Length: 306
Image (cartoon, rainbow, N blue to C red; front, side, top):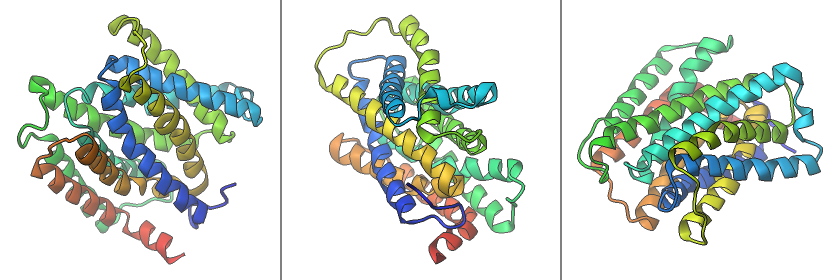
């Protein structure tokens, strides 16, 4: 059982964070592979459905089923998180991945703390905006601009390449909002919250997938195996770990995963997918990481002193 706190994350928090970074780093490659055989909304609905099924079965076995959601207020928050933190960003990511490399999508996730910090300052009384944080946020957002503005062809996305980039960055904003909402959710077991929000996301995405993608033709293929993997690991298991970290060690600590996910996404994209990346992407990574580090310097210093 994780026993860390936002002021003192323990060893299990750090280990979980590292595992989560690898699993999420592989998610973008897996989604790109799944798109070889399925439409974008089908991939989004499929991963949430598989993840929800796995977590609801596990949650029921461990006494953390949907019956542990605390009343209407709890269900309202679970539904809101399911919509903004799962359904919307998943749909945006899978659509965007049709037009940009998987490594690009992974790097865009590195900008998540840049959205989390301003939101935390606005909605958390204990957070403040000092000069270092402001400079860090500005530098980081310059990196986001470098990431989004075309600097050469990243993929054969044609006219949809720019919308694809914007879709990935918008998904990152959705994750940041979701982190704030998760921290403010009524107390409930992590499996309950995670399974509930994935179930809500599936209920939202499935009808749109049927309307726009049609009934999928399921076969034993690389795309199907990738979809099963992304549903079980980067969705079901990873979202459970994410909720557990946020509830235990806080959203600032959770945002540290943004330093690691882009690295794994680039490694998987370049070495396993054979993607060719433009120099502007690496410049964007440096600016984003530098900005996040400066903006989080006080929090990082406290974490590493303990």
